[in-house]
Length: 428
Image (tube, rainbow, N blue to C red; front, side, top):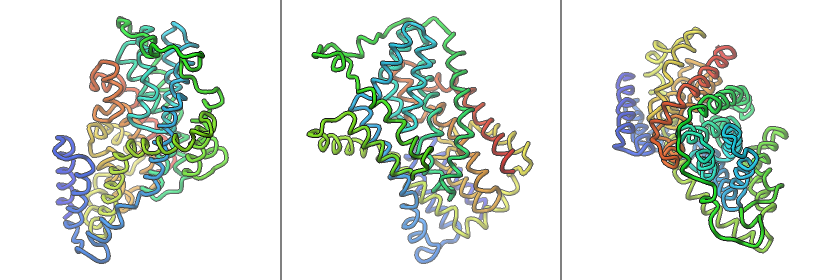
């Protein structure tokens, strides 16, 4: 029966890779198929309808709310001009020095990445940042990759990601936060190395300029002309982090505090109600796709944790899972490419189910699976040509997602290696 479940998983990966089914739909169908293969009844305890679908769908509800709040805050950063102002200030400071401009845009991308991930983060930092980098001579591929590497620096501090791993792996938020802080230095060093090394590759024509981005209207003040937000509003991305890290406030209240701070520091009282509702509705539009995916992931996790599935998969998974720390690092480092192209180790796909199997069968402690999953997530978030942030950044810069993958993959692969080494040293 375990072999049948593995074949079903392989079929699910094939359906996602060939785009015959959207990822969320494929995961739900796979979960139902696994449940039936594991001998689950239709209704009742440990059943398809009551356990897998009914209980699995809202299992990641806290993550969904965190995603919505992060998207809401992201829309506020966009509408109030906070993100654009941050990028402009960095570009003005960097002047015509390409490396300084790229490092500045990298820093802004990291800040935005702590608030919201995926395409919204790439757009907030990249709409001005990418043409600014190209204007001073940064190669197009490097400009797109800089945005993505910056977002990856922010991922270890992205509060919705903390909530996801905490809920999915049934770990305290403190545990997730602790490992993310250990992962951050690897992401930072890799991102800075990327900018310093790749920005030396010259020869790109300066086809864009900041003038075209700023627009042609001429309002009465410089702040209106540039769309600048007040200086104190620029602290908005830091507010949730300070509350969650410094004061150990819960994730959802920390994000709500960020929303309120952005609103109060940028919006006249008479306009607050309209801006709140407008950006909230916009946040729902942004969050709809990831929330749908998290519903599907919750259903898949419920299926692979069924007693029948655990009993069937345990001997097979145990036979191929390295227990030696050195082999653990070697094997799972070599398997890094399997998290690309929506592969089986993509934690926002079938990888979540595999993580659930590893924990449910007792192959590895949940903290070791956390280290593995978060390390792979650093790769997926930058180099996967099918991820929305990679596609948007590449297309906006005028290059292909595959070009960005080839250029960024060595750097994020090194980040994954660092995370796996820390995991093996501390958890095995």
